[in-house]
Image (cartoon, rainbow, N blue to C red; front, side, top):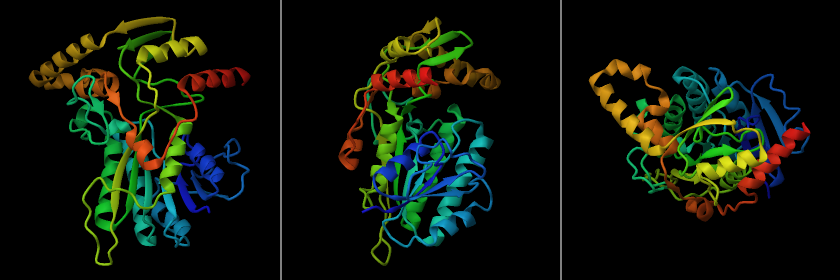
Length: 358
């Protein structure tokens, strides 16, 4: 039997697929989109059991607006999926479009009594610098300490998780923070973990590091599976309230089973697409690591140098982007019963075919 699920960011790259998958699972959905958003091209635009609600989550009125759509949902099984947020922008943009909306959402849930929350976070929250090369990154890996060396997106995701963790510990929320890796799918095959492209020239940063790829449809499946659970295994200590109720917070990494190295994925892009440039300058991991370490020393002696160092050459950022590591998705399988339906090569090939048809 279906349940009520409220999805923020329902028109986003992942959000649109979450709504579609949830509807396929028989759930009723309130799809929250920005005012004036064109939903005609959404895969769920004409499906049953979907109510579209226009709310500006960055507005100071967002808490009241979200309260209005939540207050009639008294079923304890109802869930809120928070997939809204900015993928780019500086700290001011991230505060306005990611951090504030999360707080507004939490405030609305407090007023209505809804407790089940699934947050779409990111694997960017981990502290990569302290990990030995080729070690395993999993949910027990500490989150980032060197936040000033990381980008605004990482800092925003850490702030989001702090907000929802407090809601779990202080207000009895039952939270699952899903942490996808580099999301790929139709129209989104590039990842900064490969390097960067300027015009027709590309810079390849490393070659042998595994990519923590997450196929967008697989990520949507994981979100829906999480929303169907109510009781979760808490990763943190949470005291019970006088009525016996207790909050919980769990983190689950969302990456695919068969992960490719940078070079293996580049070969797929070359084979099926024109995404990879013809002229490429290659920088090996060891050279980049040495250069970033040297710049870190110079920065201590010459603090004003910090403003001139490219973000990717800051040690914490470089290690987060291209350090050779292993990535575990055991918790994704064990706790959610997730299983893949596509291969990475299929996604790259199908994306190319769809582009050609358009």
